[in-house]
Length: 138
Image (cartoon, rainbow, N blue to C red; front, side):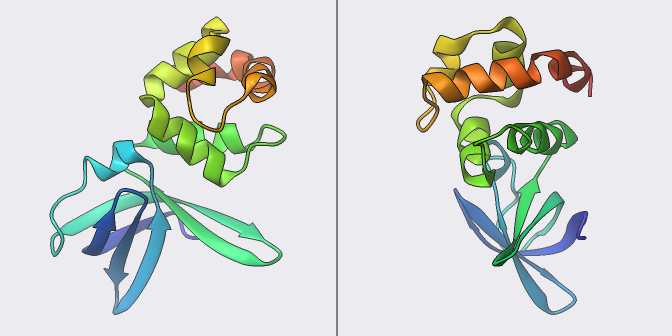
């Protein structure tokens, strides 16, 4: 499992990066919050990585902060929330705002994120509410 990448930022776009480590380019999908913190292409960067393995694919998801990564991992633990939707949630609101919205049961704020419907927002609140105080202190 890949835990982090430290290398040359070869390419960056709002949805992904390519980091060259030891002559190999690793593509990692990223939220907007991480994109805005990236250095210029050609500079060194370190991202925390979540390695997502399914039977038909292996994907890397990169995060600038530990809080973003932990939030992502909590989000994908919810039934019906995959990595793509979890990235949309983290990109749609600041990580701390997502944490606060879930903790306070603010379904309307979560519904404002594209791709998060009423049932998904309710599931996020129901399944993650008790886990948000620990995440908020990370």
